[in-house]
Image (spheres, rainbow, N blue to C red):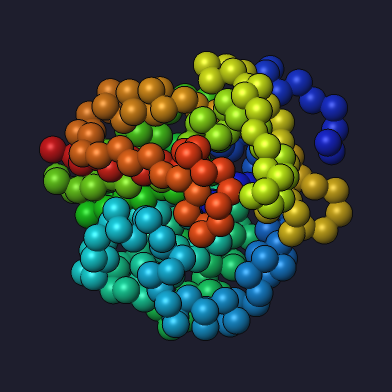
Length: 276
């Protein structure tokens, strides 16, 4: 469910969410038509696999730099979504396992891996109820990226899971949207010339909010909704440290799309930590 930024009924978000992503409201959204949504977004798995195989480093972007050479590494991709990053890592020589609770995501990911000619293990499970008896202390790298943390109302279980999966000395790479852009600033305008920003958010807000699922614009019918809790950077780093992970680096990144949008505003961050 891996993730990159991404009303069926009247609901009260604050009263209806558990401490993990598998609240029925979120789970239902991610199990509705996800396969078809990824086909709309990336094309049929055979078509998408051709693109990934030509330039496997390209879909990894900054994530690839943070992981280092994937060759020979055992990598866990938590909430790995449609498998595009996992397949790229497999093409580069890693042994990759994905955990995500959407069967539609699993179907697309396995079709993508088959078309690319690489093995991929894909476990359908809420990450916080994952059976780790055969997985703990097994992975050189654990990866979670782009649109992950806001599905949790408590970061401690997620960080503890990541640490438990790692071998001694293993690396946890967490890349996500920067809270300044998701919590504090709203932006309007589709060209750099008319792009406008407004500070209208509360960086320290802890409430839940209802939004369309990240794949919603590629799905047919009524857009599926999910509940989100947006964390600030201090909360994220503290949660990793309190789980016993040793922080190695925190990189705050600008818009990396090549456009001149949002110049000077942090758009993403990459946190690298280790299990020692």
